[in-house]
Length: 254
Image (tube, helix red, strand yellow):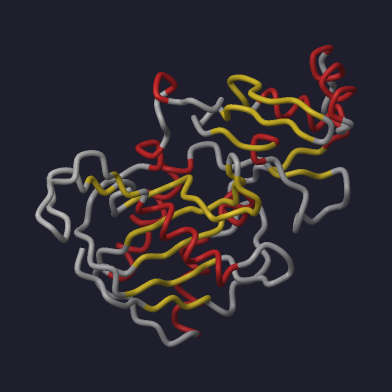
């Protein structure tokens, strides 16, 4: 890695996204509106929420019947039992339970609060919630392929979400979908400043990109779900967000 600077631009002109919308076409329109001509090596960081919306990942809570387990966990956490039921459906295991807290291992492999189920910035009323994309890595590949068809350029795509962290306050952006760039950079075998060979250094590269973009996209009413990044010198590589998930046998926290 020889990068000493890069630019990040929040694209103006992305409208509210609805089920069935063509994200590639809308992103292309926004790039033109922002006078950005894509180049090889550019990266687009796209908020998972608009990917979920375009894929129709809405659920009406009125259609959800809580199981006995959901009812019990709702009693412990103080959460809506219908949302708890959806969390269970989207999860492999429950990791932590406390008042106001439900942390699970998501079916995609990461550990997060409430399985990423969200009501913020979701239209159609309080009874509507939004699930994460069904397969974010596949979604990223489709978006990358669509952008390549339009521009004939090698553009990386990161689908980002917001996660908390064990032992630290505050949310950060993370990558849950990756295409066209490495999710991990393996620095093992490289020398440090004093010639020592690094033994264990793995860089969560896609997470770093997602978190940098999050400084511009925000979480509230900013309305900036797509960030264009230029200047990061990383060769094209078909990484996946699943490369970032720590194997259970190495996990000391869940």
